Amino acid sequence: MKIVTGQLGSVAPGGRSAIWAATGRLGGHSRPPFDELNLASYVGDAPEDVERNLQIAATSIGLATTNLVLMKGVHGAQVLIVERGGPVPDVVPGFDALVTKSPGVGLVVLAADCVPLVLADVVNQVVGAVHCGWRGLTAGVVPAAVEQMRLLGADQLQAVIGPSICVKCYPVPPERVLEVRAGLPAVISAAACPDSEVPCLDVGAGVRAQLAAAGVSPRKVQTLAGCTAHTAGLFSYRRDGVTGRQGMLVRL
Ligand SMILES: [Zn+2]
Image 1 (cartoon, rainbow, N blue to C red):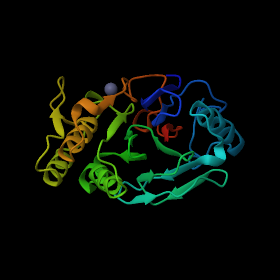
Image 2 (cartoon, rainbow, N blue to C red; image 1 turned 90 degrees about the vertical axis):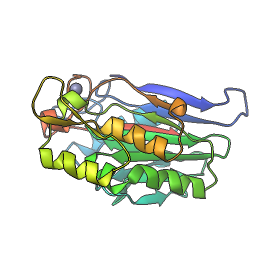
Image 3 (cartoon, rainbow, N blue to C red; image 1 turned 180 degrees about the horizontal axis):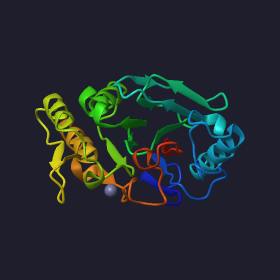
């Protein structure tokens, strides 16, 4: 998958909008096993290749890399309010969600099977980027990000969910399904594999359910096509082990 970009909100000059991008594996500078467009500096890739890839990603939303803020997720529910971007670019450890009201700051979420998503209220000018795997579902990082954005004035949220591992590619131990269900009594987050006795987890469905439960209308949630594990043009940790990370970016 090459970079996909989109705009939420007004397309009129001076109109309020947010710009997002979803990157894939194709069109970057990294060499195997990080080929091509790896955006993560913490997976063992050459720093100069990652920097050039980040320039490609930043340009796709009209920014320089010094305007980007990236996070290294820990599968928790901590939300960081970002005041401004940089320097060069920041990689913030310990957070799985970033939110900002600052125009010109590019929030970046990296993933390779987990669900990356971006949120925006273009009228009230708040954007967010969230990283959510099965532990994020149980920790509640999605509702935590929505709540923090509401505290910053958001009341008309839209979301774009990026490519993640699909339910058919994500068999898990039965106890994990129970654990996820126990943490999410109100949502259906697990489904059986259609072709297997082994239970499988649908993290994307869990994220959509949590968004709906948090008051984000399903009509305002867009999901990009593509399973990381069975699409050659996407990075998959579960498929490849040592590999790169694709990302989603959002800015006001
Ligand atoms: Zn799949």
